[in-house]
Amino acid sequence: MTIEQSSNYSFGTRAIHVGAPIDPTTGAVIEPISLSTTFGQSEPSKPLGIYEYSRSANPNRDNFEQAVASLESAKYAIALSSGSATTALIIQSLPVGSHIISGGDVYGGTHRYFTKVANTHGVKATFVGNLVEDLESNLTNDTRLVWLETPSNPTLQITDISKIKEIVDKHEAKTGNKIIIVVDNTFLSPYISNPLKFGADVVVHSVTKYINGHSDVVMGVLATNNDVLHDKFRFLQNAIGSIPSPFDSWLAHRGLKTLHLRLRQASYSAQKIAEYLSSSPYVIHVNYPGLKGHKNHDVVLKQHRDGLGGGMISFRIKGGAKGASVFTSSTKLFTLAESLGGIESLIEVPAIMTHGGIPKEERESNGVYDDLVRVSVGIEDTDDLIADVEQALQKVKGL
Ligand code: P1T
Image (tube, rainbow, N blue to C red; front, top):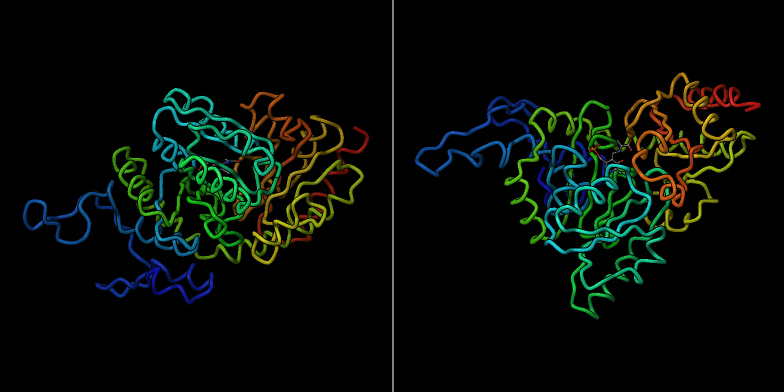
């Protein structure tokens, strides 16, 4: 099914059928993996089919891109070699001298790229704790891009994308300067939210997480409805070569077909676990968008499918860094590891793992304290997961 044919179908149907043609030669229901790096031509510059060279385009990548575009309600998607390569490509598309404004709480690798790589190419970043409140006063004549994660990694802050769009539009009307809004939708996946519908120009994912969902592929993707941006990003990707392999594209496409089922189950368990943690005497504060007490729960109800909170939780534990270390070393089902969004539950301490490169003062100003624990809830049985959290919390007693 093509993107155009898919518009009347719901999410699960599109996840399974878009970009999944039956092989016309063999009738295979699942696409073959097309490993050929090059494709024959009948005359110079007259390819036999639509492909020439696999860096520029490949059947497995095309099929995956079509599926993601459909699920993000986008015209286009471009798959890349990692989420980080996706960030790099977008920032490299900006002219020297550009200024970007980013939400303060973002993945440590994104912070690293903005502060240690983009600046060496003449692109300067300002980090802002609360974009809705502080974006306007930080806009300059050189601002070309606003970057945000909603929910943010790891403190699960929620941003109202339509409010960001309003501020950016007002600035554009006043100055004539176009600013691109980029939303990193990794934590929710296209099943729970579609940022383009709320005013984002580009949505990005670390496919490594929910979209692939099985912790066996590193990959990224961006999606957009903007023809000019799409052409620019496609050109750059081919020039740079930051492409995923056909096998990874195939695996990620297979993973994506169960995205809706996995996200429903992960959200269901995460809601229960977040509620359990909120009532624990060993927990100081829980960040989870599905909790009614979350600071921006009203935005969650507007921006998320069925008000789902997603599979990610973070919380401050009693006992400081020691408490976080003891707890995360004591779980039996939650594996202590970086990453998220897989079928198996993971747990980590952002301050010394995923966000360890951010200066202490800066990360603490965004709520990333030494006692913050981040949980990626998988799709194991809910009761088993809660029992595991319960037994590990007992180990923190008296710290
Ligand atoms: O790992 P990679 O596929 O390059 O994706 C980078 C990335 C981008 N955006 C967000 C929101 C992310 O969380 C990540 C990667 N994050 C982790 C590895 C982590 O454990 O948080």
